Image: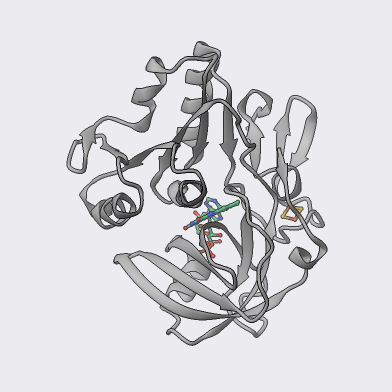
Length: 258
Ligand SMILES: Cc1cc2nc3c(=O)[nH]c(=O)nc-3n(C[C@H](O)[C@H](O)[C@H](O)COP(=O)(O)OP(=O)(O)OC[C@H]3O[C@@H](n4cnc5c(N)ncnc54)[C@H](O)[C@@H]3O)c2cc1C
Ligand code: FES
């Protein structure tokens, strides 16, 4: 596992929302500028972003990093509830509070061909991975035409991106899981990020094929740094915290919470 947690990752810093780009009505790319440089960010690592300098909302929200510069990073944010709605309604120039990078990213895979399977905003860590390793293959699944903005934007950044929607309204008909049956368990490996239902299906399909597979979990988080136990997940080695033991886990370890 790629562990990259320096102590300054744990300290909150003020960042500026330097650019906001809307991909759809409810999906935004937020560019954040910091005065101090960020430590190196591994694909799969996340930041906790507080939507205001004040106390409301009190808790930060976790987001995977999808792009980096020396003093900047990019997040792909879908409106899901109150915190993300507030965040996405802020004007450029607004100041926010950020902690990170946090957690463990996807492990490096020397000599293996990596196939990344993403469900909607789950593409965020693979945009970063692709920035560093052009050889990986990325497969994106979206629910339908409403997500065309994401597919178009991601395809500009990832030449050769395979896009799927179940009704074939965007890209090919089907889901990113379609590629799994063609992969070689000795030379190829799967990384996946997306909704829990998709991750369970990827886990089962890779287990059937004996394919090595790493999944990034999106459990709810409160502190993001191991202090609240709000993000625990059942695994073969007992309860583990998604924020500090993950969010990326070997798929064979995850037993889920129900
Ligand atoms: C490691 C990690 C990386 C993430 N990366 C991204 C990303 O790149 N882009 C992005 O848009 N979102 C990402 N998420 C999900 C994002 O953090 C949640 O959508 C956000 O916290 C919701 O906050 P809210 O206040 O808007 O919603 P709330 O009002 O708190 O909840 C609204 C709805 O969203 C659901 N929800 C809340 N938290 C999560 C969560 N962690 N995962 C899934 N559903 C949730 C709730 O169950 C509820 O149905 C990530 C989550 C984790 C743990
Ligand atoms: S979010 Fe607090 S321990 Fe993980």
